[in-house]
Image (cartoon, rainbow, N blue to C red):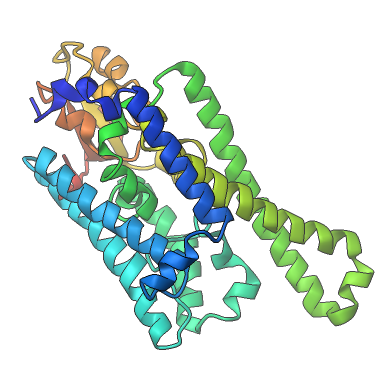
Length: 364
């Protein structure tokens, strides 16, 4: 049994008690003030930071580092979780925080090499692309259109969602005490399928509209707004709408603010457009969770600690190996299983042919 597993619901901060509600209110207030006001600018100036976003990035990185230390202390008996946690800390500290900061010092536009379109939707906006060095442009295109789908097809979305992504990094570290709060109901699953694919479609549509608007503007110059007034206005509004609702409210205010009440993967599970794309690819790829036949004792640990709200026990009880689009491959279901029933694997489903291929380095 893992350290602290049986005491999870005794902790006032993670059992939806009044303290949890207060913490959620505090987080929601912080994000609203950070995104929509200038209240943190004096503090940023006092700390000699360029902007409130530098302050936010610093706090975010500290949360991942401190939360990561907590996770390693709690689950460090697993080599998989120790390496995975160190990985998300590394990518946040180096790629998301330090490297963009150093680039700006040398008067180069800050660029996060660990984030891809459409999670960072403006990486495909022409107005942003023209201001980037050619290698960064090529990397954006290669990462978003080739690297992400190929790696996801081969080893599942876990390579990114649980090892690289800053959003997932916060969920897997500072969000660890809240992972069991994810809603496991069929209603939540249905809402998830609708919401996440709706945001994915909105990301596609917004990107296409912004690109079309830029092309028309380049062709017609200053007369563009007079020729296509409705479309130019609509393009500006849809871009602003996406930035406000998806970029601020869903990913920040609600995505983190609801940790103490709905679990640590609210954004990843219900709204992230990149997770939606990778989930569709994962369904056809090699990653799956395999189940040892007739070993499940129905303790329910796997389902309880699935941060994505998957009822893993239902699969284990019926000896059914499975793959789910929402699974981020955190491996906690296998980690908390007292009988070692579950295993994360990358293999083709050639069981009937007697053929199996695996990438052992990523097996759990």
